Length: 546
Ligand code: SAH
Image 1: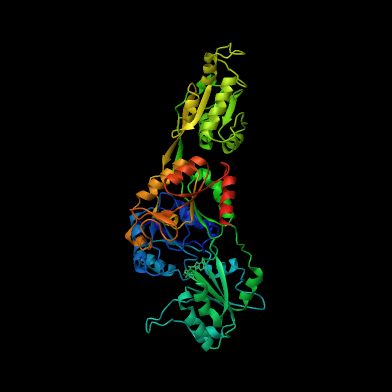
Image 2 (image 1 turned 90 degrees about the vertical axis):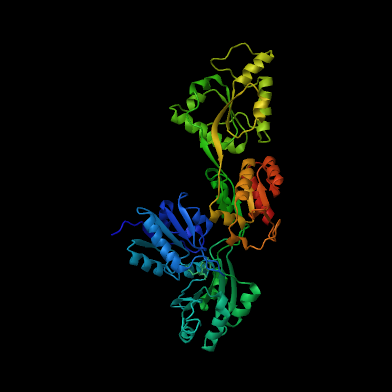
């Protein structure tokens, strides 16, 4: 057999990323190439190996982006290009339920490419389940039938459905891809004898934060679609079981349901806020704008003895410092007797994870606040101990030399982008750059698209604002995505747009006043948290949308 990569036909499930199978996730994390469809959620694309080549063959409702025959060929081509590789073909729902997975598999067999099928949870069953509608129910429906509402017969171009048979069928009827033809389908079913009062539900964007259920009957199907503007992707479910949905609809409308929020925190730090916003119903697009990296091997740890106060200005600083301290063969005993200062509550909490309590935390949680607080400590000389190596004799009378000495025993542990605010207030202090912040250079296409359609951006730092703007504004939109019909400066949805036609939401939620002013400088509308904590920011976001 030729030396080909292995293709996995993977079902991504109906939308909720939690409904992807463990096996599917495992393969996506290792994939070299991911060939994906339109209905796959950004959260699942975000799980893919960050180095994988991401190929969008998604089909827009109006124009086919990549023809099925081309997709089939593409899979074979990637299997040839990546001889030892893993090629993931990621499809909405289950690959073999109206997913054309069978056609792709036939092509792979013909070319001698080996493949696995990783089944997914089909929308046909899971979407009704999320609307509280069981597809079968004792005494109501003893079978269910999954039908395409889309397939046309080659002979006459009409829907290739056996309406007589379907009308006589006592089981639950579930139509996929049928919204555009549903008026016709409903009429034909009634002509063939199906009761006009048969209950029916349209479920739009099921299992996602945008899920909506619209109830109707067979005779009101067509007019309901128009009146309620039911749009794809949606399934139509018909039969007595639909009535159960009125009692069993369990999915609550949450405060942030239907909101797509971009979180610009670095992935490592963002998990808390992402989990909270998701639990509140939002769809969160994780878009870290910066990556942080510990600056390794650049300190002489013995020098720590020269300092009495260690000041941390971020959780990154704490993590980098302790990671390096431990890898250097030291442990926290080298900090015995030292005073610890933190810029704010989040950093304070991080220090506690390493078993360290803070002695100094400023009220206003800024670098300036911390600088002033330490300045005060130096001036008053209170609480400062001078460890071994320091000269003695600075007790009651504080000469400027003794103040300088105390001040020189302060160590600032900061990132490479920290400004000089603290050093200006404490010129005798020493700064160690314990981590570096590097901007993310570009966004993958799928993420850019997700960002463009978001409701708002969450910014946690000025550098995130700056990097977001430079990354987003540098991108030139492809002609295909330009047909968004947005005007030159502000779009109907409140989207800003630049000369390159990059579009992004204008609304932003900011943590801290500095971040707020950076966002305003770039033309964002801002809503800012009262305190510089994630709790406060989440509270503000909920308040804004409810
Ligand atoms: N293989 C997929 C179906 C692909 S056909 C599966 O097993 O689910 C695409 C159709 O699936 C859409 O037109 C719509 O009818 C249905 N569909 C997919 N995801 C859906 C969702 N989240 N909510 C409602 N319908 C969905």
